[in-house]
Image (tube, rainbow, N blue to C red; front, side, top):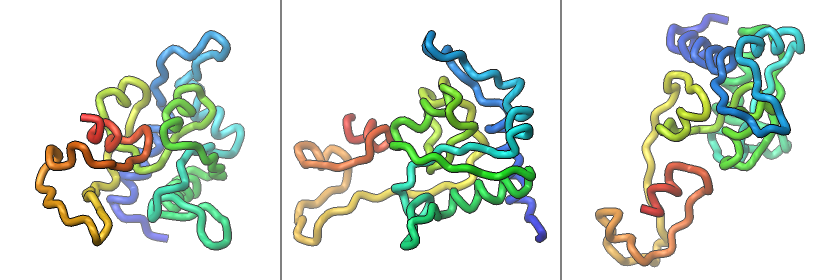
Length: 171
């Protein structure tokens, strides 16, 4: 299988995420992961444990056969293939993903996670591998004109907890 330069760059960036996670001090009941030993531990175990939040198709979701599927899932599996290790996925609520990395319960997290200054204080990020756009959707019966966030004041807005959209909606 031939791998493009972009795919190779993505895989290298994800490897950096796995090999050198940055952890803040963990709670006293659990020692902080040791980044220097992470890759060695993954190699010895023969598997890479990845946390995700499987509720965001087409990136990560459960397909009709109840199997984890999606773009991020395929990317992580390709990474495991390149590294010669099995990939094991653990499904968490999105707002707990980075805590799972910080506490060392997973080796990495993948799940359309936007980079923010606050998140950079908790974990290391790879280079971006996907840049998307966002939109606000409404029922067809909604007739109010919305051209800015200010036009949404007083409206009921739903967002996923722990996302950059939650912070945006609260502003």
